[in-house]
Length: 114
Image (cartoon, rainbow, N blue to C red; front, top):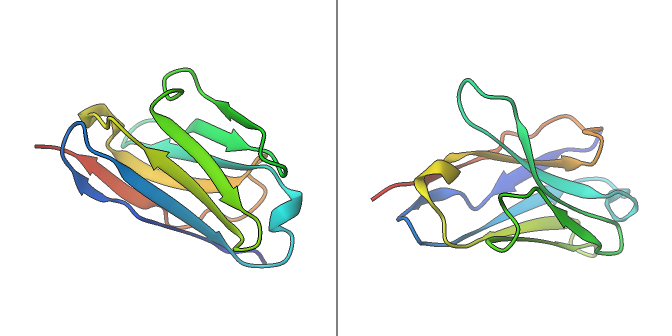
């Protein structure tokens, strides 16, 4: 069973940056498109960005230009570089294969506050 573990969250001031990591177990990482999602209390989990097996990237409208998704297939890790963070970016961030085919990991909490 594939396990996903997100890390890199924390407290950051408005305008700051964070880089999140998503480490996957198993040997199938390089076959699948991966995605980052986020969720705030009382809201549905929303898609932030996704990256294909060979690096093709797409972003939800409100994130392009501020966030950058990447992956390292050798390390079985996906990344999300987040710049110009704002308080409304406060959320728990999760990763998963596109189609949400793996069990969800614990997520990593990002708090943007002064």
